[in-house]
Amino acid sequence: MDGTVKLWNAETLDFDRLVIRGCDWVKDYLQTNPNVNDSDRQVCL
Image (cartoon, rainbow, N blue to C red; front, side, top):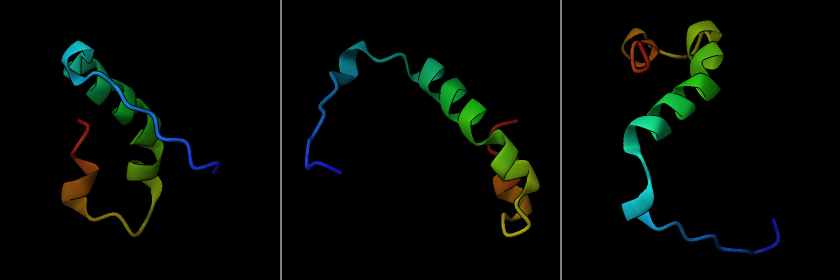
């Protein structure tokens, strides 16, 4: 951490694309972590 702050122009972000990318990033964690509850496992289905 170098203390840098990055700002994004939210008007240019594609929300659906961000959700897909985020779900791709966490899907294995959500499906395999025994500490994740069942409702949270369904977030990206």
